[in-house]
Image (cartoon, rainbow, N blue to C red):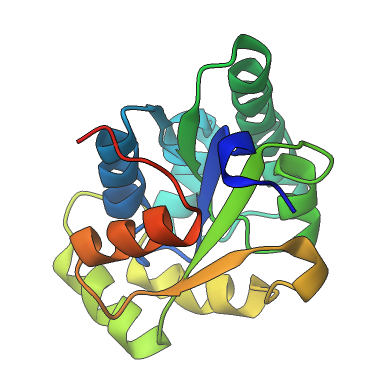
Length: 175
């Protein structure tokens, strides 16, 4: 496993509505690291498909995952640390993004389906509707121990969740 000083990129994963954007952006801000939101890597066709209530297939996700992996590789090459969000629900996705990349740690935001569904009902203007949540939980493959994924419950506030991640990964916040 990476030592704390080796962590260069943190991949914040979880089902839609688990708080990836909130926690990921706050984590990047606290650490003074670059931040990227996985939704920004989606093609217009993928966004339209999800907006219409259709879950993405592995084929739909492949270019999206490659684009996120390229962002991660750029951070690793340049030495600029970063935080990126991505659902990364399946082991194959996590392997593509973090596997074989020393310095990348994955954090899974873990929560109860009903809690997440309520969060999704309260958010407005997002293309991913609450109706797709069941497909997210159906696709979710819980990490195996050999993946070294830090699983963090979403029961605390975003600030407390970020503090837990920073402490668990033994990182030093910028502020």
